[in-house]
Image (tube, rainbow, N blue to C red; front, side, top):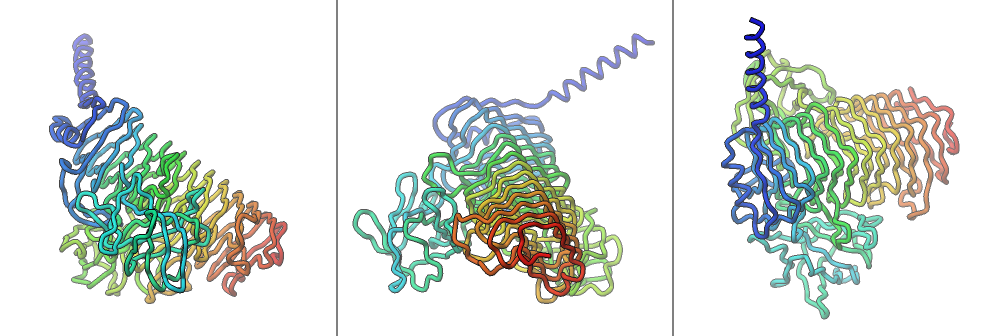
Length: 605
């Protein structure tokens, strides 16, 4: 009997071992030419739901000619028919090991799409485009009175042409932008967005050819002009300037990126929709060292839309993108009408959220009823009927609040992550280093941060972007902030600023429980913390030093600015600078404000 049991156990072990090692391994040798069809066929012919792709170290080219065509709704991008190089759908596990390879893409192509995969691991590869989808030029002269600027365009490694007084770019795969569109000037030496720069939208009346390959761009009434000597970069019109992220994952779990570098993308670097447990480590989104480009990805470096579990970004280099370093957020939908006691019709409101999966059966959803912006009652989703890309009917297991009405909003409670960002460098790019909206624990520590706008922004929005929601547990500690908020608009190192529609109370607390401690801040301007409608904010043990790297843009601004706040403590901070206005606080904020043991501040008791 004992022998029989051991024999049976051995057979079960062998069967189990065979099952565990059933991953199909596909190896690719380095070779010239377009690899798209070879990779596509290998994935499509895979007989297993567990697949591993290994690439011999080298440079691999991918073009759109033989890529898989597929209509995709992609949040915060342009929806439409996309050409995909690596398409993974419904796999138990996917692993890609580039072994130090470079994947060089050409034209309108979405490099990687993962849908409904249970485990994803991508390691040791670099993503780039042979020709970026931007127009770039040195600014030679400005004539504000006559409304033109002279520029010297970059030609080597860039694609554009002048036709009938218009700059056409990139002109690849029959794709071109309708205008120069979103444009910023950059410091030629550092490649960072230039000091004092504002976002510009260029749609010239006409462009004139000058001697020596130079161009004269005629556009009157430009409010914010670039400085002579800067590098002008345009990424096209807003309708088409976000084709696809380099890596898109949706409805997938247990995702790991290790030593994955993105030098360019036709949208975001990494985008995750309704994914669970994500690690991005030892990786980056940044311009290739030695390149004369000034832009990496054309949108956020990393973006997490309605994800859950644990999200970690650690030991990464994030630079040169044309939007935030990371955006972690949920999605608000608006109630259009109450159909019956359990069913409501809702709408996705932003044009780049069309087709997004807001909720599914079993999800918990908050009902947020105007004018109160705070989370209160909740319901469990029984079913979701998709009317079209904009409208849904959501049926709940129990009755919805009796006073729910059109204009109220819903927020998904289930799909929110615990977020950690540690040991990263984020700098030299447009917008914010970090923008976050999740009610679960947020830890931002030991990062080196430099920002055009606010370095860290906490902002839920019930209109325009409709990105939920308010934070409830935030620790920002041991970071090094240097040269922050150097763009034109007024920002702060840390800005907490909900943007709520007119139907919501603009004075009620929204965000809560934020700790800003043990940080070192070296910057030229005044604003350090600018907080609106926060209940529970601790600012302690920070070292602040005013620098002379640039002229102050807002010398009358306070170091700490509090509006409609409660339970704020400012303790044990030190300041070395000339700001005469340490604190601005309204009457509501003053009632519960505690200040003690701070050094070097003027008028801060």
